[in-house]
Image 1: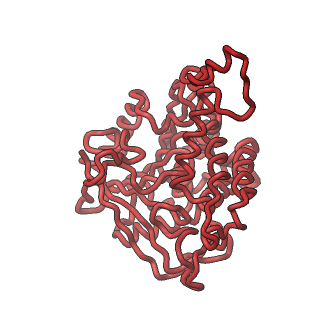
Image 2 (image 1 turned 45 degrees about the horizontal axis):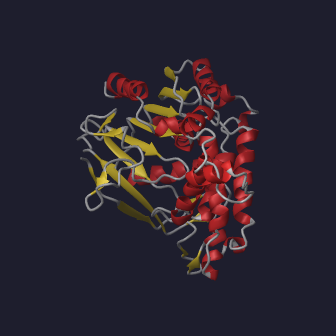
Image 3 (image 1 turned 90 degrees about the vertical axis):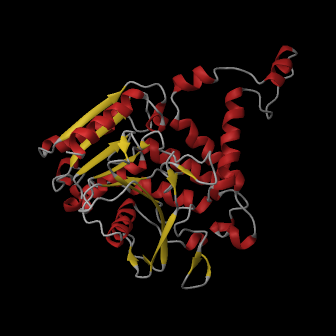
Length: 377
């Protein structure tokens, strides 16, 4: 079993952000797996999605059930083989898993940032990651890889630092969010900011947490991560055991948890509200909304991708309606328009957007083959 060791790096110099603001005296949490080779040419950067972190693979020595969020993908002998590659997972600025975020102190005021934490974008995260790589002495990445929001970061790497990336692996992602996706994010944000305990984002100063809003936000998000097939197969219209008795006696309720799917969503919401930060949720979903590399090219994605020189693997999943295969194919077309070397796999999987986190043999095989035949060559 791969043993993970969390690390942290401090950056004193200010990082200029896309918003025009800057942030100084910040920390980035990260983990590395495998061994960096002599010429530092085998580094693979993993970019995380909304509620993930730098803990990508393996377990902590004192927590045997603490598997990293992409442990199915990364490790000795796995699709991204840490016997060959030096894998780096970084926790993004603004997150709540160790890197500087809204729950940390602002060095300029010595008070918790809260709602005063600056807006961050995908491009800002990439710039921060590049600084970390500089500090590690890594100039060129063998590959940058991510799923969902992580895939957007991987794509942005090839545009912001085209000479530093040889391969980009973009999984279950998109070149920007659709209006429907932005709408889901906004409803989730409204659930948080209208929670009476939100306190305009300064809930920490008031000794409260907007858990009710976070629960609802997570429930909304979780619905979009699953496919209709999975929800029907797993839950259908099943009632909870206690509710079956009510139904047989026509003792219906408008507020009790009656259906299994309701129970499941409430469980997911309760769990999420215990470990995730509300301001972080607002920051990260806004970064998702803002990402659109084609915007400065009048919506022309082919023009936006003209300067990339990396080779690409894109993977999508048939039942992923949040980041549908058509969105990946937009990227494929734009890359082909620029005569970029691109491989594309569309996996027929029933699991919806969550499929990118699961151990599907076909999916793992595609990634393994790409890393062995192209990245390692």
